[in-house]
Length: 425
Image 1 (spheres, helix red, strand yellow):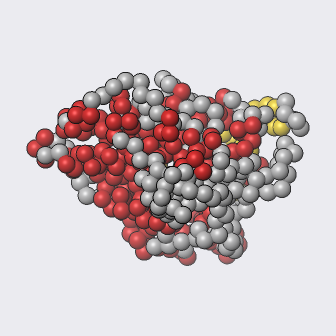
Image 2 (tube, one colour):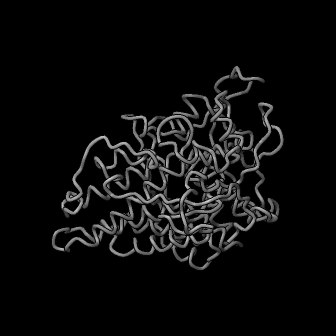
């Protein structure tokens, strides 16, 4: 585990973010990303309705919908926070995300819903986590005969619960769950690992492979190379699980397209512009110049072209990620072979460690390109390798708009959630 050098921000008392299912399962998940601290119910569902086995599928679909909502914010909020994007808007909230000016009192990070300006993290993720675990509990208690696809539904809910814990464990400095004591990132990732393990039993082929990629990811985070390798090797070529997006409602918009491209609120950072390999443009990170923005000083806007519409889905678990986990764990010729297979797919010349440099450094470079603007991978790599010879530096000093970068490197547990929990001194 390579998270020991994370900077932690904020201190105080930790509160609870436990909600009754009657608050988070309303209308099939339509309220799931509302602020849990000030919930306003748009309708009334009798508690007894949640005890009906006939709604088992609805419970899981609600959890999935709110996970996808949270994952959208997580993907692009972490991208803005890392070195993938530069803020190019005059809006204060965009500058705070792009400038890493996020502390324990940051309302947008802590309480903002999925839709709208900024990238609310804590409330949407905890909402989705609560829903997934509540679905698991309820469906488990239903009689087997009343839920014909019971094992599959429970496995699916476990897989999505696992990814909620991935988000809480990788990007946050510390965590609390359901009013419990403070948890380290490692402890949170252990919870993710257990959910993924449960998902491997009874799940469809798609869910099993989703769980394999997820468990390989957290085992890599936790320093369990053999475990990560075993899971990643079992993922079939071509596998991809995505989080859906849509143009039917703002909470469904792909924020990489909506905020980065349509609103020009962020521009691709210089580190990811004009990327090539041995003189050949890398199509995995294709960007386009759009305009000179009237900021002070004026700023070139480069748009990402990975997501081309409000409905562009976001990769969640892929064979490519699994291959790069194998490469990182194995090193040596195995890593070289994987790098070159990925290069061949992209039409790039091969990598030769004898002349092209360190293998692990190249694996991390391949991750930055293959997984560009996907699921918080870049921010996680910043944190995993902090303080090591392969450290990926954050932007520091004065930014491109003349403002000092903040010193946050992970997101603190919000102070608003630190109030009233007797389990934390």
